[in-house]
Image 1: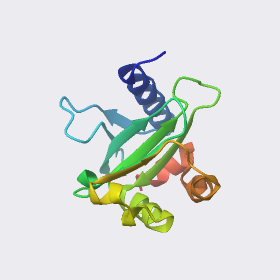
Image 2: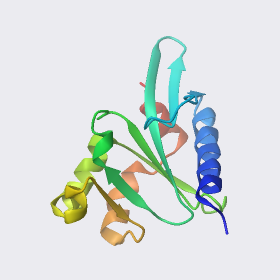
Image 3: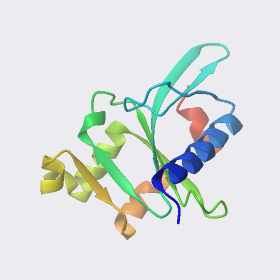
Image 4: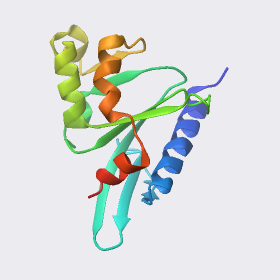
Length: 145
């Protein structure tokens, strides 16, 4: 059984690998104040985007109001972090994640009034909504244009 730190490390390493394969640079902040990684390009221009990592050993989707101060922050959901053959990453900006939460009806729940919503059993509707956010090298590059 893995503890949460192990899952986080596996997810972070998976995410860093994806970003590097997409020809992006990666920085790890010394302190965790809501930003887990900073991915950037520094070729013809400099463009950086903060990333909040959500790694899990299964499927998990969450949104938290505390990230609202960074509407363009990328929230990267790394599922099955402990199973390389099944690992998948979805990446949404905070604004995009809020739109998903709205469409799912989560922003009208008691959980959301408390500041966040989490599901570890995403249904067919959510999985369909997340399809456009399943990451590839080209999609990572598109976030940095």
